[in-house]
Image (cartoon, rainbow, N blue to C red):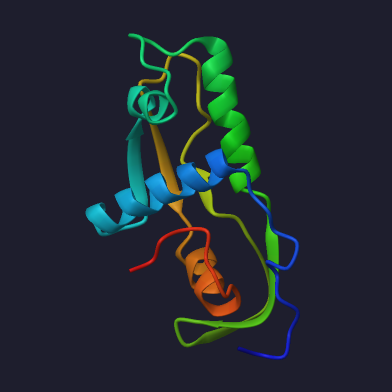
Length: 130
């Protein structure tokens, strides 16, 4: 680890945001790549919304969890894939397109540099990395 400040020093997540992060990370591991297509219904089921369709309020709760999980961090002089990034803002994931109310799936990209930064700076990651 470099002598820079730990970008995760004040990074705290609710248990539900941690649950979301682990669900996404495990999907990433299974799929073998950062591009993910996630069923909105599956997301709803993971968080206990078990009826046929998620309500607008439940979907908003999920969006709020994504917002919490995607709180940006800043890395300085961070080495990633044989390149040093002097200054970079990172988020856990990003949406390929905005999540519309009627979407059955959301397409997102898990930020592998964010995962690498977690492994570098966090003593105990909030996701289970094998």
